[in-house]
Amino acid sequence: MKNYLIKIFPILLSALGGGMMVFSNYDDSPGGSLLGLLMILLAIYLSIKKYDK
Image 1: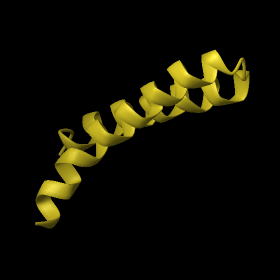
Image 2: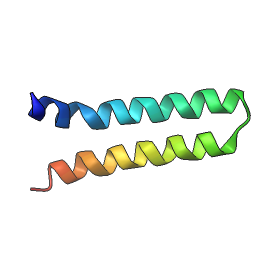
Image 3: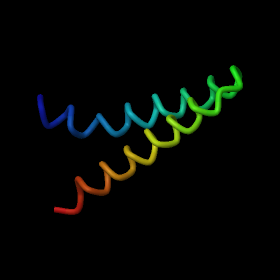
């Protein structure tokens, strides 16, 4: 079960970050957009790090 959570975590993190970027754009909040972008970049890093072994 733990192995599945490790595989799905970057996908959930990037989906949440994309949602933050879209909905904070409606509210005109630049902090939410930047935090969403940071979450997407973190998800990309985690997915690359996982296959680096």
